[in-house]
Image (cartoon, rainbow, N blue to C red; front, top):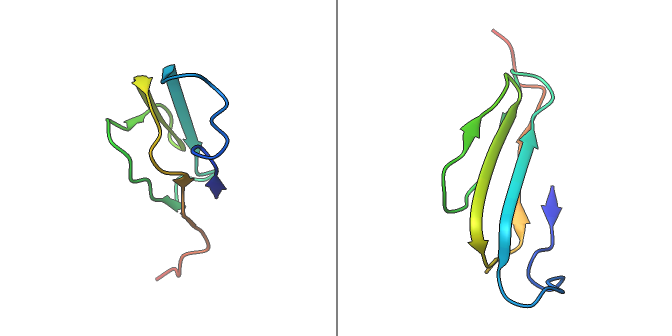
Length: 71
């Protein structure tokens, strides 16, 4: 999943409170996220990251890996 944060920043200054929730749909799926700050697990499939006075310097890219081979 790709989300544009930098070229679509129509706000003046930083984002006061930025909240990101990523849902991987099933616990077996894998998700990758590289961004500063802590990522907190809030359910078996959901992760949350909150930042204050957040100024994005890059767009957001979140890879999802599904249908993993089973033993």
